[in-house]
Each structure stands twice: as structure tokens, then as C-alpha cells.
Amino acid sequence: MEGPGSRLILGIETSCDETAAALVTEDGELRANVVASQADLHAQFGGVVPEVASRRHLELVGPVMREALDQAGATLDDVDRVAVTQGPGLVGALLVGLAAAKAVAWSRRLPLVPVDHLAGHVASLYLQPDPVEPPFLCLLASGGHTLLIDVHSHTEQTVLGTTRDDAAGEAFDKGARLLGLGYPGGREIDRLAREGDPEAYDFPVARVPGLDFSFSGLKTSLLYATRDLTPDELEERKPDLAASYQRAIVRALVGKVRQANAERVAVVGGVAANSELREALADAALAPLALTTDNAAMIASAARFVEPVPYPGYLGLDAYASR
Amino acid sequence: MQTGSPEETEAVAAELAARLHVGDVVSVSGELGTGKTTFVRGACTALGVVENVTSPTYTIGHRYHGNGAEISHLDLYRFQGMSAAEWGDLEPYFDDAIAFVEWPEAGAGVLPSPRYTVLLRHAGEGRRDVMITEC
Image (cartoon, rainbow over all chains, first blue to last red):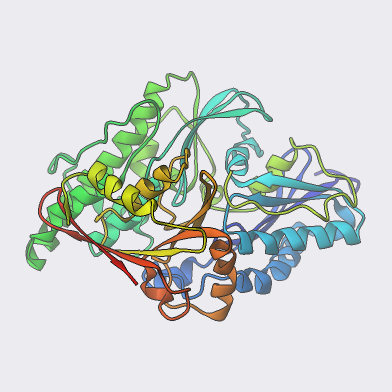
């Protein structure tokens, strides 16, 4: 344990559905990680969010910060800078976190660190107890994003490829919906795929030049494979469809990772939880499961490598929708 | 009309794009996999967007810079209806931009009226019916 003098970074994340706060030390030790997730609500409503609004973040951002401080047994006196997601994301949602971060930092005369959400996902790998040291190739695959990133150092990275249409996590969720599975779709397909034959259907892996991805055609192939089945036939073939569909997504991801020909590979984002992907990239470094989906620990972690904006120069900082 | 490939759907969208002005809203409806994002991509490319135009299902809203116009790309797939608070979040995407809205049904009566509605339908393997209506 570090002494009472140990300084903490308070991270705040509100770029999409999750309202999150976390406390991380300068050495990358995670002291608290709180995510007010709408996952339960999503499940209840079959993946549709009952209300996607900044108002929810506004209600939750104070409580998650307090909960993080309680978890860490800390107070704001122990915090020496505040990190927050500046973008990309839904602007109204981002602004709630940004305003909260400015308020806390300004009231304590602390510096503020604006963090890019995608750089944050990569920085989930820099936390203790097993930090991954750059350089490495990072596959970031989630519901909203699919990128292949060349991580040169803690501060420099180059995007080598992105999806041209749907993200990999979205392909899982929409595939699950076509199969009439529950939510979250990725987990349901993963579970059902274990009972099926991954070679039963020959779903296409899109031929995309370079290191970009495409999952839109695959989704359509699944639609064509399911639309003419009777409900009984669909029920019977579901495991094979799930297994073959998952195989195609994983093949596409792994294919591009191999094509990039990197010595070391890491995987982050919600799709990193997929068991077939984890097996297929057995040598890859993986973010801890709790940190694969959106969280604030990764934002605080990323802030360790970003120049803070000193008090009070950050009051005019704005959120950005796209990179 | 009918298209036989994603490229043809993009070309139809490019023709529509030439008629659009800042402030216009285009709703893009159709079942999963009919090519809504493909359609918006075609329009965006014609309007000078160089980035990959990707599905905003999870991220809800994307904003692109075109030649002389900002372009918003929204997706209400995950919405059930549209509360005042949600409209408040989305309103900035309609300011000073050409806005494309996928799965617009949840925003009916709340979103600004579209200037064009686009309806895409599966029409047999690889083919799509594309219906564009000026409102």
C-alpha cells in the first residue's frame, strides 16, 4: 500500500451509454472503478435504451464520483488531477462529463486532462497488475468502433484501419437480433455458438483493401440465411447459424490482425470478451474483462500520459463528436 | 427504382445529394441489411466527405465535414420514442447541417420534418428497391 501522500487521478467517462468514474494512481494502480451501466435496462428492453439522454448522465455523474471516492477510501483531497473523455461521442453526453470534470477541477484548483475515448480504450492495457508496454498492435473492437491501431508509445499511435460500415460489436448485436436471441447479443451468440458447427454455413469474410474492415455484407448474408426458414427450422439451426456467423466475424478480425504482421498484439473493447476471439488470438494481451467495455479507469489511465491543462485554462474546452 | 449492388445504391444517393442544402433533413428507412448506411455513405461521398462513413447505431450521431456543408448522420435504432431531453441532445446535429436519419420512426413528430424520405427494401438476392419521396 502506498502512503497517505499517494496522489490519485479522478477519471470521468460519459461518451455514450455508461456513466463512469474511477480513481487510478500515477503508477497505474486501479483504486476504484464505478460504472453505472444501462445494461440491465438494455436487457429489459431487448437492446433498446428506454431513454438515451444526457439527463441520465446528469443524474448519475455525481453519485458515481462519490461511489468511486468511497470505494477507494479517498476524498477529493487525494485527487491531484481530473481526467475526462472529450470525444468522440454524443456531444450532449460528453458535455455532462466535461462540465462535471471542469467543476471538480476548478473548485479544487486542479489541472484537467482531456482524453480521447479511443486512446482511453488502449490505455486500459497500461493498468496494473500486468501493464502492456508499447510498441504493440491494438485491435479495438466494440459496439461503436472497430480499429486497428499501431501503438508506438504511450503517447503516439497511428490508426492503420477502421470499419467501413458496421462495427464488430454491432455485427454481433444485429446478428443476435436476426436470430431472435436476447441481449447483449454478443454474449448470446458466443454461448449458443458452443453448441453449433462453425462450418455449417459459409458466411463471407469481406474482401476489403488494406487493413480496413467491413461487416455489413455479413449481416445481410445472415439475414438471407434466416429469412426463408420456418420458426421450427430457425430454432433447430440457430446454434449452427450462431457458430458460423461468429466464426466469420472472428476470421475477419484475426485476418486483419495477422495481415498487419505485428510482433505483439493486444485486444480491447467489448468484443475482446468473445471466447472464440480470445482463443484465436491466444498470444495477444487482453484487457481485463471488467475494463473491456466503456469505463473511466481507462480514461484515468490514459491521462497519465497526456499533458494536463493547468487551472483554470480548461474552462473553455469543448467536446468533439468525431475525431 | 431498383439497384443491384451497394455501389448502385450509393450512386442513387449521390444524385439525391446534389439536390440537398444545409438545413435539409433526409429520413432513411428500411429493415436490417437493406443498405441505409450504404445510402448515406453514397450521399456523404458526393458531398465531399473523405472519412469512412460508418453505422451510428451505437454511437447515435456522427458529424462529417463535406465540401461547403456539415453533414450529420443519426441513427435512432436504439430509441423507443423521443423525449424532450433526447431531442435536446440531438437538436445540435440538425443546426447548420444536412441531416440523414436512419430508423427515423422513433422520432416521428419530434424531429424536424424531412425534405426527402428514402425507403429501402429487399428485392431478392442483392437487389434493393429504393423509393425517394420529396415531402
